[in-house]
Figure (tube, protein in one colour):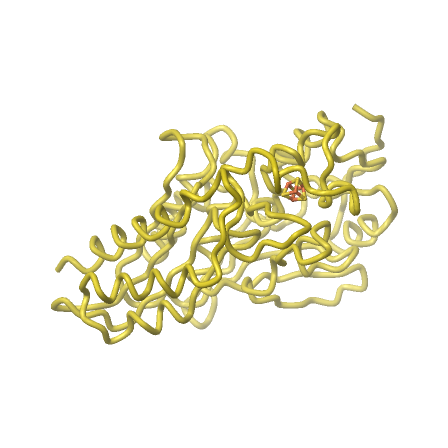
Length: 326
Ligand code: SF4
């Protein structure tokens, strides 16, 4: 591992100011960053530790939502009674991610910022446009079982690994940030993660030196909340396909639906068209098929991940059947 200096931040603006320096990296839980450093994918010259900043609270907001500090640990967020009762899709998504030990360390902000698990991104002997812009993409003609079927480009076909972010996308969360001048900003989670395009090395809409301070959840929408994750083994594995669903309906009809998908793209994937097709529709196979068609519009496999197209359809059918049964 390359040598680095270590600094503890005393305020968010101090952390933001330090983070803008060349070679500097913020560290919180470190559950992804330290792995990347050991593999020399990340080689920071300076680590800025933000663990002692007062960003570890979950607070009620005046509108009936929740404000989750960026340093709230994934395990604490999943276990919070307000999250379990009002945002069960988020609690379930968190508990579907990583291992108990990792959830005890991993933070809300770090979970949003974790890097792809593309095998070639982690192998510094292989070309990867995300790690080394312009070097190529080894996954395009390589082993691409876990890769994207939506929103990919000729430059990168990676997926985003977070379960938490998928649930937050269904809940229409907002990400709060601060910069070194103390200017705060609110970024809708729909705009937070970026698709690869021709700059896959740029992963979020955060500017240099801008750090996450909290995630704000609006009041919970009505309906049944479900998080379904399909993966290669029962625990400690990333999603091949996941669905965060919030379905409101009665007597075999859907009143409203929210659907966000993981494992399909470099950001949590939301299909508003699919949601519109389900709204006010009878809860039957034809409607489920129509919604799946909308989700998969423009989807494309790259050989090893072709199975994700039918798997997405089947997973969505299963979730919709479960949530509209009564
Ligand atoms: Fe790199 Fe993206 Fe290609 Fe993976 S899919 S090798 S992350 S450019």
